Image (tube, rainbow, N blue to C red; front, side, top):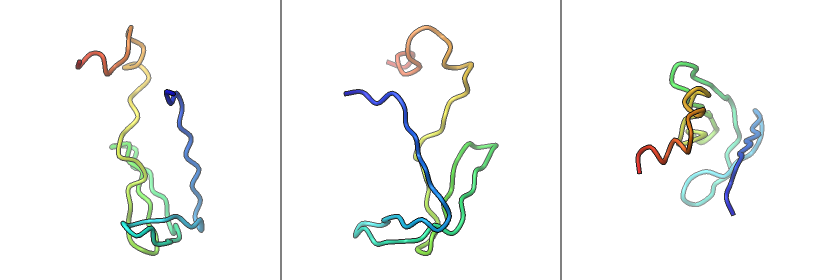
Length: 72
């Protein structure tokens, strides 16, 4: 099965599990950095990265084939 779309719903006050022992932490702030495209989440257990990847611009995805195929 291939994943074609990913939707991530986060809200301030939501409880998530963090760390190697899955400790509960409450989201206190969500920041989007427009220049870098990164999403940071501040929690009661410290700051976290929401994603370990960035979304590509739409014009990069319009070429024929997959963008990943370009580097294979």
